[in-house]
Amino acid sequence: MERFDKQSDNVKGALVLMLAAFGFSLMVAMIKVVGERLPVTQILFLRQLGMTIMLAPILIKTFPGSLNSSRIHLQFARILLALIAMVFGFTAVINMPLADATAIAFAKSFFVTIFAVFFLKETVGVYRWSAVAIGFIGVLVMLRPGTAGFSVYGLMAVCAAASAGLVMVIIRILTRTDPPSTILAYQAIGVGLIMAIPAMIQWVPPTPTEWALLAGIGFVSYFAQKANIYAFSYGEASLLASLDYVRIVYATFFGWVLFSELPQTSTWIGAGIVIIASIYTVHRETKRKQNLASGPNGRGFNNP
Image (cartoon, rainbow, N blue to C red; front, side):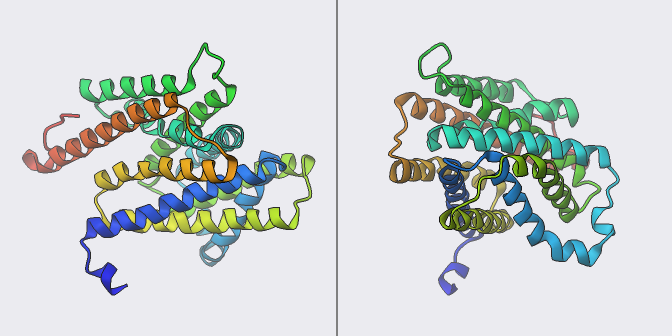
């Protein structure tokens, strides 16, 4: 621990982010394992139930204030979009190679850029639009439409990325008025309630091993999220957002070890295009914020 404390903030953030990325990749791998026999609705319901239990102490302590929201319509919109993102995303993970599903999920950053223009009225210049266009070309390379390798699960992964991107934009709006615990509570409880009936209808009694994996999904997910938060509290967001793409390395490792999966050439090429375009998008966004902060009267120059 003493050796860790001596590192620079960016190094600390990078090290913790590597741990978070490993945790998220392990969580996805466990979802793929239990998804071989259990329905997605059941996995998602139990995951949300676990989240609600972990949030219960703070919710009970601050109730009813913990559920007070000045933008209730956005809370419900986020619940619906999060539901779509998780159902489609989990289904894609279960039925696709881990590396493929992970790489396509990175398209979320491009959807965030698009939705931010419409809902946050952000100005996006030609460079960022070009990065978005190039990024989607990378997604098409991985999807391989018109070939034998094309799969509906790839489209589901794209839909999950789009829904997750819109969720991120909604969270940006919600954080202006609602505390994080309230935002988390609505998502955890809302998605869990919606999934309760489908999960009961499709319920498959888990084996002891599957119960252990389901518990592990909740446990690992919780600590990965906490590590992710700590990472960004240490290091610069632009640097850490670029390093987060190490997830595809972890996903490839788990896919190889657990499922004998190795990415095809098209996946590596497409993922490379997506990652480079995403990093460039993050770079332009960081530069824009720096210009806004350093310009005249603190407003800066808008050069997205």
